[in-house]
Length: 528
Image (cartoon, rainbow, N blue to C red):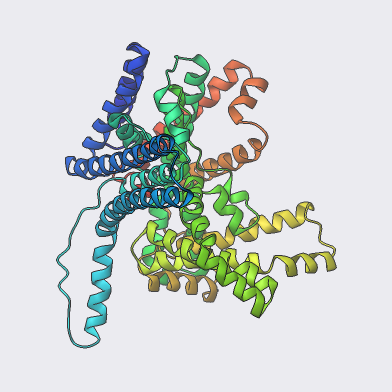
C-alpha cells in the first residue's frame, strides 16, 4: 500500500476510529491487526519472513529469561554449593544462554544476508571467475522482503538487550509480534529499542485534542515535504544522474544539491507522516532527524541523520567491538610500542572501520555503498585523530568556536562533503559515481542560458514550488532550534492565520504534489 494513496488515508482513518472506539484494553490488539494487515497488503509472500523472525526472537528471548530465573532459583535453593561449584554452574547456564542467542542471531542475520547479499556475492564471484575464463551460475533472483533490514535490526537489538540484561523478555508472543511488525516503522524505521517502544504500544491512550491537532499538522507537513519537494525534484535528479556525462559541471553539481534536498524531504517527510499518525494515537515514536544539514562535522551529521540507525550501530556494533578484550589488548600493546595517543585511538578506529563498512552494506549490496560507508568512516576517523592538532591550529589562528562566521563555514563545508559522498552510490555503479565527481570538478564550461544551466527543467512553476518548499524547510529548521514550530505558531499566530497556513500547504500538495507524484515509486528508504 502506497503511503501517498487515498487507500492509506482510509486505512489511517479506520485505525484511528477503531483504536479509540473500542475499550482501551484492546488498543494494542487493534495495532497488531492493522500492522499485519498493512504488511500483508505489501505482499503475502513477505509474511513468513517476519513471522519467522518474530517467533524465533521471542522464543530465544523467553528461553534466556527462563534460564536466568532457573539459575537464580537453583542458587537460592542450594546455598551449600562451594564458590567453585557456583562459578561452574553459572558458566554452564551462561553458555546455554549464549548458544540460544547466537543461534537466533545466525538464523535472522543469515536470512537478511541471503536475501540482500547473495546475488552481489555471486556477481563478484562471476567477475573473478571471468578473469580466468570461467563463470559461476547466478540463478538467484530473490525478492527482498519488505522492511527486512529494519525489523531484523530492531529484533536483534531486543534479543541482545535481553541477553545483556538491559530489558525483560516479553512472555506474550502477540505483543512481541507487534513490537516487530508495528507498521509505522516497518518500511523506513525508526529502529526502536524495546524499552522505549513497548511502553508506548502496550499502555492505554486517551483521545486528546492536542495530540490529534499536532499529529494531523505534522502529517500534512510530511506530505508536503514528500510530494511538493521530493517528488518534484525526483525527475530532475534522475535526469542528471542518467546524463551527467553530457551536462556541464555546474549543472551536475546542481543535480547533486537537488539530490540532498530530495532525500531529506523524502525520508524526513515519511517520518513526519508516521510520527504524526502515532501522535494522534498518543504514541511517541523515536525521532530520526534533528536538523542534520546544520551539522558542523560529518560525525555530528550522523548523530542527527537517521539517528536510530546510528544508535543501533553504536550500541550493537561499535561499542562491543571497541570494548572487546582482544581490541583493548591491541590498544594496550600499541600504547607501549607506538605511543599513548596511537594506542588510545586504535581500538576506536578498528571499531569505526567495521561499523561504517557494515553501515554501507546495510544500505545496499554494491561497491558504491561500500565506498560510501568507507568515506563516511574515513572522515570521522580522520577528525578523531586530528582533533588535538586542529585545536592547536585554531588557537594559533585565533579562531573562536562560537564565532558565527566559523560556524557557518563548518556547516557549509559539512553539507558539501555529505552531499558529494551521498551521491556516490546513487548514480549507478561506483564507476558512474566517480564519473559524476569527475564531471563536477573538471568540466568548467559555463552555460549561456538558464535552459543550458537547467536542461532537465520541465516547468518553471514546479521549480518555484520546490524552491519554496526548500526555503520553508530551511526556515522551519531554523525556528525549531528552541521549540517546535507548531508550539511557536500556537503562541504567536491567531487561529485564522494558522488555518490559512495549513490551507496553503494543502493547496500546494493538491496543485503541485499530486501531479508530481503520478507514476513515481514510494519512499526512497523503503528500498533499504
